[in-house]
Length: 367
Ligand code: PMP
Image (tube, rainbow, N blue to C red; front, side, top):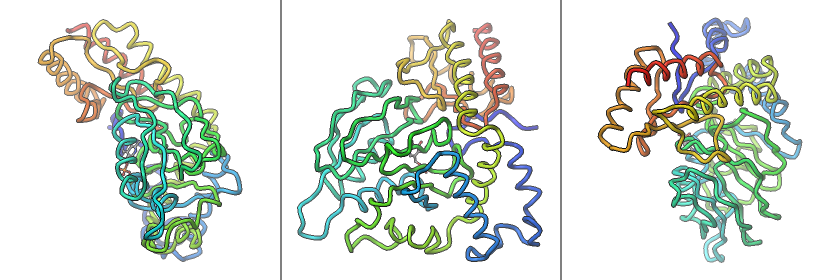
């Protein structure tokens, strides 16, 4: 029996995708081979990576002057690759600066990693509000190498809703936990990146969408594998890419296209989020800690209203345990913030959220 999996990532994948992958496991498309066994330079795999890229371009409306790269190292490696490629300088040259908005743990890590290579300036932070809102975004210095934001904050459940005005400074955004969840105006960004393990496919692939003019800026000392120009020039096949993961992303994208693309996803995702937020509004025992204007569609944390810490912890543990027994798994909040969190990515059906709110009502009745 399949459970409703509310994990923040790796997370649930659409069942038809898993079933298709299972069918094609020993013999993909009449080739007599698994995609796992194919040479990454074969015409069969070339067709797969080509189709996957074409689908992501079509679904996200990626303009022609952007490249799509399939890399490894997770979103975390992009925290280093972006400064290494856009802001690092040759030895002896004056250090550049880059701007950051601190909206949570991942945003903070991006700035900390960048500070090894440039002057990382945090222009605004919602740390004093426990990251439960998105702060107003100040303008960067005109000479900033880039301006970094975490578009959807997986742990605290906030998201950006307005594109910050960065002037001519390229906007860099971590869209790991919201890629393909609703339309995004790609042309407002210089670079976008996402680890695959939430809305795209299995862990192991990172999708990077980068404007042409930002490629080829890395100083000579940056390792070949960490340069965007290397991967752009070689069509993401400078070395062996995560072939099977790219194939799985392709299957997810086909599923998404058949489901109506991003406008349809946005509608379903808004409906799912609305169900849960509306439930939380009327709940006597649980509440959303996030400011209304900043609420994520993908990650919805909730906490007991109980004021005593010990009692709260007891309720949380019981909730997570009993929910799992009812087939609703991975509802514990991130280890840094506690509480509960329902991650409801594209693959989570409306029925999963309805099952969750029904369970919450039963649980509350027993409190
Ligand atoms: N950024 C965000 C917004 C995330 O949610 C995560 C992982 N949950 C990361 C970065 C780190 O991603 P990875 O594990 O792919 O390095």
